[in-house]
Length: 279
Image (cartoon, rainbow, N blue to C red; front, side, top):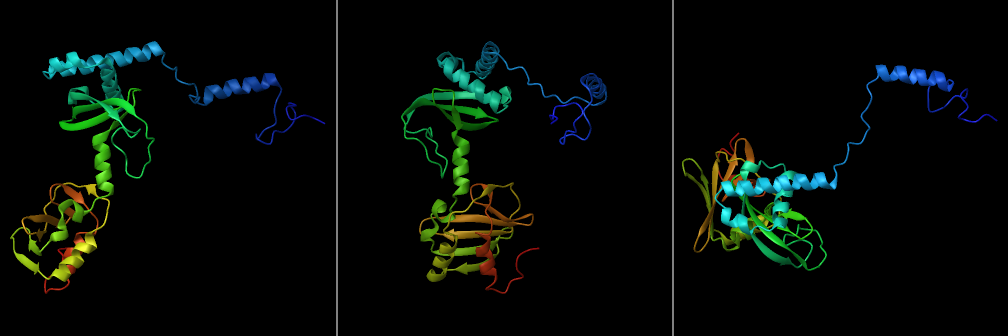
């Protein structure tokens, strides 16, 4: 019985009958001229010496940048390991070296593999881990990195922001549970639209927003409303609802919070004679 690799046997995975080897090679050579060849070749891997050279160049850049930012005293104290971590951060995050300044460091012993910054919902091994806390200025903003001693690092600032954004609660953050009075005003004219002083109604409103939500950062925009929560010794003012972003809220930062706070405005407006939400 003929075998599949017999040159005269039809290969079901191809749409032609195989030719003798000599003709086949000729066809393949012609095809190579006509069809662009895919680059399946693996890029040459850099050697350990080349990798070390790249790291050293990055370390030198970091130190030179620190000197140019009047941190020569700190530079003298920077352990080589920290310089290597900084170089790794700059390389992996593709940071412009001119917009990166090393501020300070601190030796720390972490009590788990989370390195002091656990991500909400994740579990970590409870192992004692030595490392560093690094404070840097990146693009004019302070950020904090945590490391172990095996060149692993995390951006603690970003993790904290992510945790807050995923578990944001207006009542907890601004201590609204002891609200005594709620006012809704037009933001521009400060015109009073409605006042709520009924304890039962206030509690109902507070309970409706006492939940964890996910927020996102938002561009500042011109808010239409001001919602004021008056407490015994202080008050919280929230700027709400932009024409281009109906879920806009501003207290101490601009965020988009879904329908959580907007629902209060809608509830108030539905009970009074008022033209309603701006279109």
